[in-house]
Length: 77
Image (cartoon, rainbow, N blue to C red):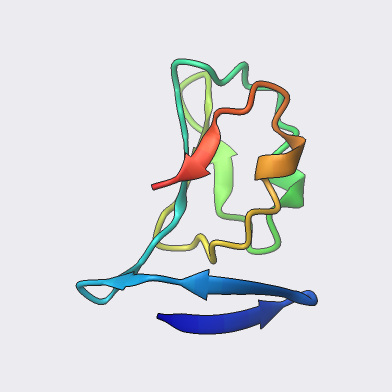
């Protein structure tokens, strides 16, 4: 387990086989509103095939996207 401070927010990374946990968007519930994309400080969210997707390798696990999702479909992987 490691701790990272980003924009005053302390996040705990659980390391599994050397890979940190990232967030994911449930494609079945995403309405492609785009509210999450500008909230991501590292631009890990982009538009996929009619839904938003999170690049797990770029996600820093800050959770900024979670609170703005109107359909609550963003969760930890």
